[in-house]
Image (tube, rainbow, N blue to C red; front, side, top):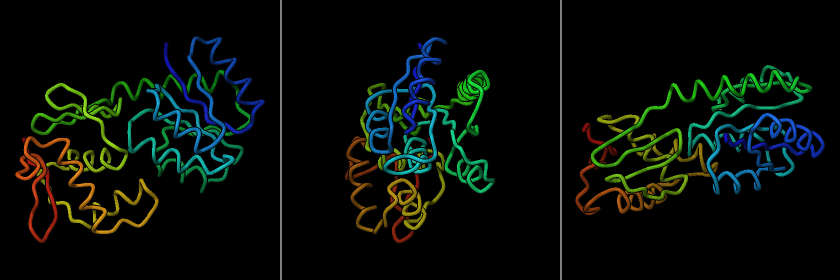
Length: 224
């Protein structure tokens, strides 16, 4: 059964849409705010996320940024605003589709199915050495055994594996981490997360073979 995360602070809409999706054969988990949404997302895997832009304790754009940093699950924004700037902002943070309220449930269902089909076709595993990332599920394995990374560690690894062989400066890494954390990222923060990441993926963290240090310039993942 496909699992959907519905993030909507309008309780009546959430209740009615949940009933409709359940009748269509989906397993639905509801969240009313940003904090709750991120908590339940961390606790389970989802096939699609329906995400309201305006939330009680935050906004959908921030939630989408965190979700996309951890996985490639399709995110469809639900909003009462048809403003072009709002729509563009949704796509810029990784949204897969955008539907304005009030919407027809059957149209939303069709868009969900389309987004999930595209996601299935686009799944690509990223590997380096004996470490592999499954972006669709947000899972990292080493020699076939899953290893658990924090959101920032996962984002860092994803950037390296997506740019194998390329020198990545500390400024570039700081920008990538800042987009996920929403807070200023110092050199010390990069040092801490590089150390933690290497402890999890390298056979010998003191002599890394997957992510190399280019002294005075930055880091790069080896091409293998």
